[in-house]
Length: 515
Image (cartoon, rainbow, N blue to C red; front, side, top):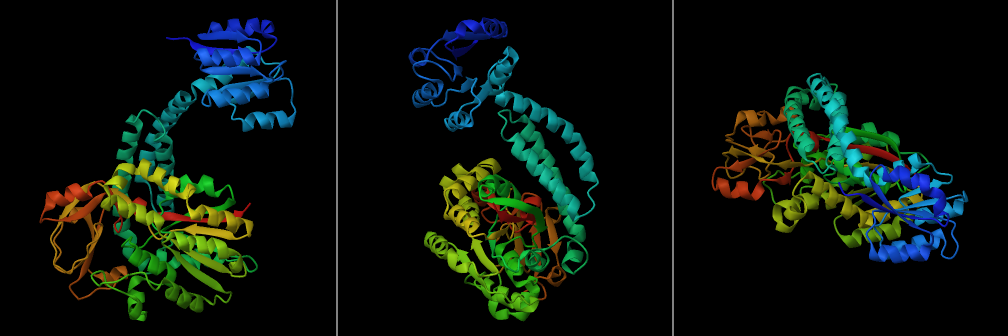
């Protein structure tokens, strides 16, 4: 094995011979250097994996040398070694992106540990992560068979997300492949769980908080009497996406509650978000406010009356403090809200619906470029993070924190990467969604769907007595038999929602306070 080249810069280098011998015995090749200028000449002519740099040297001192090293070789790791415990020096060194910071006197084992941490960081993490997941795998399989209620499923799903995020950082994909099979098994069992209990939940039996219950049960109790609350509904935001953007948000906010709720079926914006703002099931909305409900086959927007529905719900629940509603679909709308946010501090609730994540999901189906940018869940999360880091939404949250807005963050439903076509025969008035269908004369593969013969039992409106709903389980998606192969090639490995899966139904609900 090639020896690892280390440059050690110290004006008292002769005093470090025992350290050199110790490290050389362990496979490191050390080059001594007594001053900053010589060190800079050496890094221009020879390759080094790490530099050990004394802070207090004549001529160019350690911080000056460090700055010049970073100018020339920004990716080269530098360990600063100093006798000086002054806070300012440490801050300057850290600000210059050092790899480690050690206080003299240092013993050889300290140096060795620092080098291992820098050079073998990813390998050590990978090894430990793999070991931990292997231990967890057996436990998780046993746990899966014993999940009894919605709280159990929420906790299990969060565990799955944790391991997915941990494993995807490893270069070796073998563990991730095992994980995927585990998640697929979980989704199959989850579909059975939902099939057994959903009708009871939607009819009012004890169960998880559902979309139409969210405002009354979770949001309303968080509205503070003398404090403004920003209610942020990011359309189509999954729990894993929340975890990815969490670090960015917590620069400005502290998480007080991190929970989840269940989206209703279909897990589609028309149904789930209208239910959230109305505090009613889709069937109740259609009966009480027929002017604000459109069936799937009807032309026009299906979510044009969220503000009206929310107003009616607030009246029913006795919400007296002023509130406002803002739907962000274009850049200028978010910029305008940022500009005017100060004017909303007197409100009890400022509601913001942000549609961009849903747009990314749909764009993968429609645009080849997005298919390349987000070929899998890992890339989809990365794209979400990149968007958030550069979006006006991040600026909005930063300003909201400075204005002392409490933040309640949630969504209407999630989405799923689909890979298994399921053939369906239907008439012309059947809905076009790939994860659910509603209409008459539906023919389908029974084992691949959750079948709702009586829409009223699922609190869903129907066009006729013979209408029914079917929901795709696991990662199936519905394809008509006409031109089957063409549509399979088009829709396979795209993000869809409307059906029954952990990713679509179990979605985030988070309460945060400003730092």
